[in-house]
Structure formats: C-alpha cells, structure tokens
Image (tube, rainbow, N blue to C red; front, top):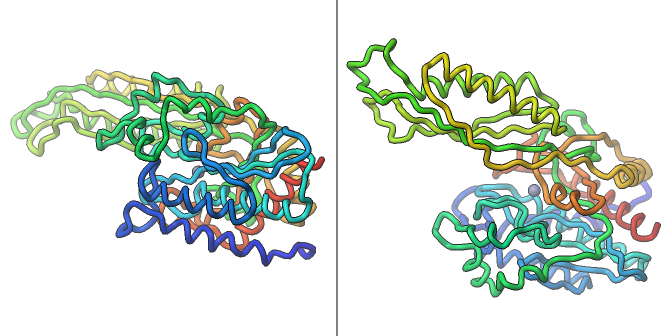
Length: 412
Ligand SMILES: [Zn+2]
C-alpha cells in the first residue's frame, strides 16, 4: 500500500454518513430509504450534486437511476455502481458504498488521465432491495430492458400506491421507462460490502466474487383441523402448527447439511385465524433457500419438498407448496475476476475468492454483460441491520481496487 496516498479516499466514509441522513424513519435506528420516497428523492439530488461536483456531467434516467460519466475516445463504456435504496432499518453501507466509491474512482481517473480509451460510467441504481414494491433490481432491469410492462403495472406498495403513481410523484413517466435501456455497456464492476463474516474471519481485505448464489422462495400452506384446545385429545388432533414446526426444524437441518454450498431459512410463519384456545388449523410459512450452483439448489429443493411431505404424513396434515420466485446462480466473469485479483495483488492487499450469498444488481446485469464484484469486509458480518459497519480502512481498500480495475479496463 505504500505507493498509494490514501488520504483523498478518507472522504468516502464522510459521504456515506451524509447520505445516511436521508431516512424515512428518523426516530428509528438505521436507514430506511425506499424507492421514490421523499427521502429517496433527497438522496438522489445529493448524488446528482456529488457527481456534478466531480465533473461527471450527471443525469437522471427514465426510472430515476443517477448516472455520471467520463467520455473516452470510444463509446464503449465500462460501468460501475450499485443501488441507493435500502431495506427498512438498514445500514449506511449496503449499496451506496459502491455508488460513492464509483463516483470517487471516476473523479480520480478523470484527474489523472483526462480522456481514457473507453468511456467510464457510474450508476446509482434507484432500487435493488424490493423494500417498497414486491420486485427487486428495478434500476438494473431498466438499463437492460429486462422488465415486463404487465409485471410492473401490477406493482403496488403496502399503502396502496402503485409504482406508476410513485414514479409520477417523482416527475417520472412509466411510459418512458424503455428509454432507460442502454446498449453501449461493455462490462460491469460492482463494489459492495460483503454482508457476511467470511472476509473478517479470514482477516482478508478484498473478496473477489466467484459467483452469486441462486435463490428460490416458496410459500407453504399447511392445513390440519381447527379444534377446541381443551376438549380435543392430543392424539386426535391435526395440529397444523405442530406439523409446520417439525417442517421448520427439518428445513433447518437440511440447511446445516448443505452449508456452505447451500443454505435454507424459514423467515415467516403465520397461524391463519389463530386463537389462544384453538388447535391451529391453518399455517403458512415461507422458505428461502440458496445455493452456489443451480444443480445443488435443485437437489436441495427436492430434499426440502420431501421433508415437508414426510412431516405432513407423520402429523396427518395436508400441504400445498407454491414456488414464488427463482433466481439462477450466476458465475462472475473470469477475465474480469482475474483483473480485479491482479490489481489487488499489485496494490499489496490480501484477497480471496468468495461466493455471494446475497442477491445484487450484478446478478441481473451478468445475464447480459461480463460482470464481476469486489467485496470488502462487513464488521461481524452484519447487514440489513442498523449496526452494519465497514471500517474506514476497508472502505478505502475497496475503492482503490475498484479505481485501479476500472482504469485498467478503460485503458487496457
Ligand atoms: Zn446491496
């Protein structure tokens, strides 16, 4: 690290702290900044200002993504960035770190080499988390044209506001959404906090992402028989909650068996019309399971299904499994990974390959463009949490590697 003056990079943490002020729930710890909320719009304006200050000629596209750019000799464009929305009660680093570091990287490259061979662009994606509308990665889908009008037309938030109405309140017209679509991007590099404990545990500065886990979500409905809690003997019950509990434990056991190449979680469990003096007759629960390869995910899916059916038989209840969403596992582009790895080595930072267990914009973009991701450590692996934290030194390390990678890709 001795050859690089890290001082200019210290401001990245300050910028992140400023952006963390834009939260919908100022009395709640953490950051809540959901798509098209007034605080989201304030953060968007802040990012436009930041890019303007760095001479990146910013503009807002048809869905509200903010772009900044350095024009190179060629129109071919290397893209970097991440998202600036958050989950409810999220942290100050998830997403927006990659945006701020991307702005800073372009600004540094511009100062050093004025006109690079290829053009460089930084994007702040309007939405990735799905925290307001039941859809994720709207920003990256929009730039690829990977969205269906019927699908987005149906989206409504929990207050009954449609996506189109929310766009309108931000001066955006859904009929122009197609204009966000771009065809001049050649590669995408996303810098992100790890959101897990692997880098910190390994005391490693940089993670070069090998693949992004595929992910599947199910809703499981368990039906037994509702009955009197006092008069119905235990042996005669068809208790949907007891059966569901056995299913949850079986799924957890499978998760343990597949870790680290797969993982499974029940995050929602609800007794429908539950009552303190009734044997539960109807329970619904969610299953989220992920794996590094699609073949592993399919095997895990089969095992989860069997486990649920076995427990249903044992407890005499009926089950219905509805698959909700599937995202394929996505390998990161090999030569881009090599470039990141080589830059980290040249800078003198420790590095390791790492799989991403969280979804990212990169997962969408990798379907269309050569894509790679850089991770930096998350303290205690915490994310989607108010105490999400990445040390200033790690923030600077990631930024330097991003900048060096972008410069290499732009100038060859
Ligand atoms: Zn993120």
